[in-house]
Amino acid sequence: MSKEFTFKGLPTAVVFTYKTVATIFSSIYSLLGKNGANALLYNAGHKTGKFYVEEIRKITGLRELELLNECVRGDFMAKWGKFEYTLDFDKFEGEVKLYDSFLAKNWVKVTKKEQKYPVCAFIAGYIAGEIESIFGEKVIVEEKACMALGNKLCLFEVKKDVFGD
Ligand SMILES: [Zn+2]
Image (tube, rainbow, N blue to C red; front, top):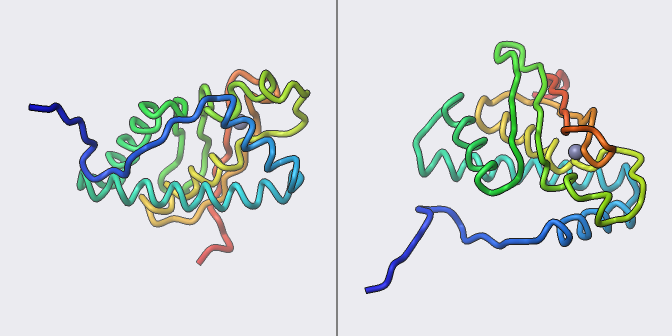
């Protein structure tokens, strides 16, 4: 008899080293420049966040804050880092702290260059996608501090998207 470990309903996963992750993402910044890379990665992160929430909702049946907690737990288990949400859930404003961002953690060590701007636009988009999918509110998320810049953590500012529908 064989033992099988499955994560019910979740797609199969693939593991990358930090070096590979930093190499892929820093190549995108090199090729597209800061603004182009930020736009592309925020958009990709947004879709990823929405997709992930939909999967977890389907599997667990959870909603709202319980669903957000489950997503944060899953992100931590998958070594994306430790997210801490401090949001006013009436206004959808506040901040999200991320300790040990899988993107920024080893960025300077791998790229061997001094970093001049935050590198976690993918995660900013991811947070926005999760919030939108869980609560049905459009928000804009901007990274204000980043481990790649030598900060202790990555800090994301969350604002309601007043131009969203
Ligand atoms: Zn960062």
